[in-house]
Length: 136
Image (cartoon, rainbow, N blue to C red):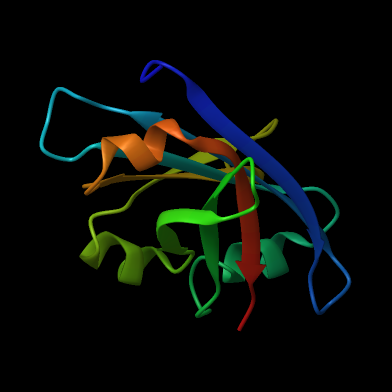
């Protein structure tokens, strides 16, 4: 049961009209004291290069991942990952760019965080992930 990977995906329209897709995946890691590995990918679907990159430089936007069971109850503590690289690195979030045809064409940013959990039993009851994107 602890080998399962939970995933979720959602598309958002930015205030400037551009579109992004947020994908999240969570795995349990029993090899360390930090029980969860949370991966979030923010992909540029239809946004200008400048608007997309500014999400990771000049913003206070963040992605929140909530763990939901079959009865629609939220389990564990929600994970809040800042898109701002400087802020996220202070919180031990790692960031990696995905490029398109050239290195100036950033098509997505992958973020990864490792977090402790208090209850393995609650983790086992998670049925799905709910993803929220909170712009500035």
